[in-house]
Length: 257
View 1 (cartoon, rainbow, N blue to C red):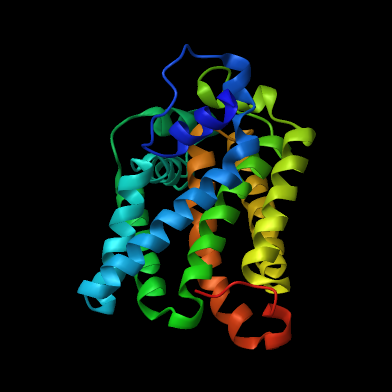
View 2 (tube, rainbow, N blue to C red; view 1 turned 90 degrees about the horizontal axis):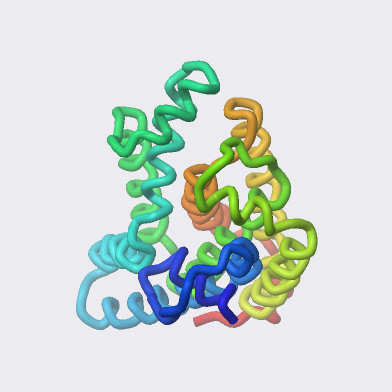
């Protein structure tokens, strides 16, 4: 259970474990990332229901973007900005990693954050009500699974940090378990359409991981955060053609809220 608590407090602001730090338990915590994603999705859906009783649609969408940042402590947004500052700088591998380590936000990171939040807000604002809830669940669960995929499938670019621990202890076994959990959640929530979304996320995560590895010599903790943020956005965008074009029968097992 320690691995679950480490996953929960690493990906969210929820703190339930008060014990000593355990390298092995923390390193294997990614196996629970999709479950934590499900918790985040349910909390976000409840927030959407509450806000929907009080505020108009555009304001609800904005509040959901803010709520997600509060729930996660902005940890993935920080990693996303650092990653964009580094990889878009056009510098050498060593300089990119140095830029990513810098706590200050540069122009590329700031501009990328504006674009990311604008696209998330617009996607949520225009999301049809009949699959709004399931889109949130799919985005939060699959994006956290994508982190596990990148952790397990691509080399770590540094020799220190918490990211090195998860890279050391998370392998094929952990990825298989996380994938099985994600498949079950996707089918329960969206039927076969959920598997289409998962397949789309796998394609994106693999390409992103290869791009990062080519430019940085591997991935980092910041890249893990960027993976979560970009995959979450990708799912929100992919929901429109998948749920809009696929026959309804492919979505019958899904739960629509």
